[in-house]
Length: 257
Image 1 (spheres, one colour):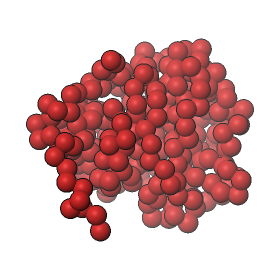
Image 2: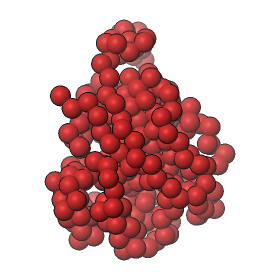
Image 3: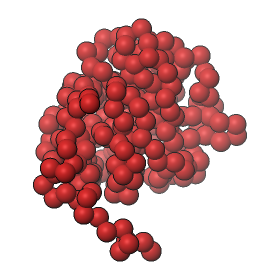
Image 4: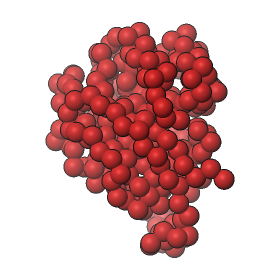
């Protein structure tokens, strides 16, 4: 059984509203990486905006998404990146998962929307792991990291790693450092977190992209500003050997409200 997943965690600032340029950058990253999966921030194809979102929305059949899928197929590696997904009259803050065969495995719609996002986007209503790089990954989008229930549900449904894209901004740097470590530790799952940098829409994004081991220790961390990337090996662990065995000792009959 596969036990590792190599991920290139990319910390970058997309060009606001320049979908074609950002698509080209994803394609370049896919072709240039040495990892099995290239992980990019939330809303990377569009930039972080809460206005005119319908004009920037892409349906899953869009030719530009197909071009990224073609690049993944040619390179033999997958990618996970944020974009505005259009589905009829609704738009979603989504993470698209394209596997190493060039298949759009899933468009994972953000279920917990932060601040003004709730006025700009519809909320997703599913939490299911997806297959990429030979493992089952729980895809988590920014604010969702702050809800233990999201990652725990993905873990209980079979996730072996957590891949998180984010557009976290100051003054919330410490919030996501804590959340990344806690979500990894409490679920005994390694976690990769790609946060954007730069400034847009009145926000100053705080970088700090990182990888966290299943015991909650930080394996690698990028600076709180500036573009950079790091390739990490995420190591799956035997949950029965986890120090606190939290998954196995849950008592859900006590938790329901």
